Length: 221
Image (cartoon, rainbow, N blue to C red):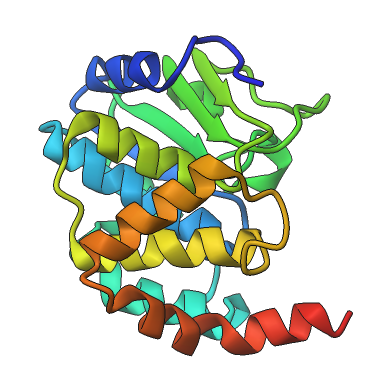
């Protein structure tokens, strides 16, 4: 289900029209899909000429090892900041993109939503009574992951996706589908092919290194 707009082209058009400063946030205690989709969106917004930041307010101690590794590798290049830094650089004309969740209670921005005139949701989860009231929502419940949706945005925009970003997005898809055992359709496999191709086939090895133990743990439940 897509809520608020017709499709990826419309979503891209709205993001292109956002103010020049954009903050991107996923859910608290981010998993691979949350952080990867945020990095993909930051890459897109930067390519569109925006000043884009990712907000992760969780302590590194609480992050999964693989997610922590991605954050450590990406915090400078992809402008990953905490709430203290956000308070110092926000302005009245900033926009917010919420990814991999639509619930206010699940983000560190829950008390700051009124800071923004423009809020866009990019998600694949069902709406709830706690769903944020956005300017625009793209909620596609049959998508495998937020990473799949963000990759479709990158493909539509013709933005060249760096190898590291391809790797992270692929990790998000693989983990959210439990190695394509759940919620994987033709679009999911096409997007995975695209990411692997752009990653020069190195992505899979890096993904296995990051999430093999996580997948094995999930399968034992």
